[in-house]
Amino acid sequence: MITEHQDLKAEFPELAGRMDQLLAEQGHFTRRYEEFNDLTAQIEHIERNDAATGSQSLEEMKKKRLLLKDEIYRMLTSD
Image 1 (tube, rainbow, N blue to C red):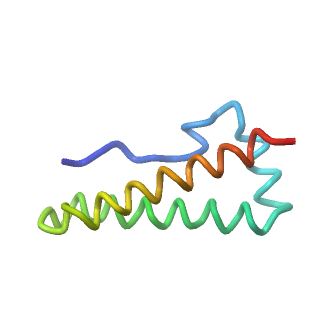
Image 2: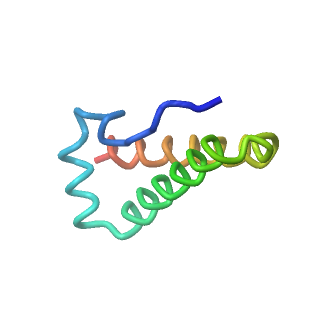
């Protein structure tokens, strides 16, 4: 089953400016943002091309991506 592409700026449009600011200023945020995007690309590749891999490892990757998304959101909304 192919899921919709997850783009953080589309997910949190009201925080896009803050996201750009943190990307320019904070290495930790940038690493988490890039890790999220890399993981999303891997998940989408598996979903498109290799349904056989789609069991345990794919679910673990999705859980990790969700944790990253939560961490990124906390960073975006903290002062």
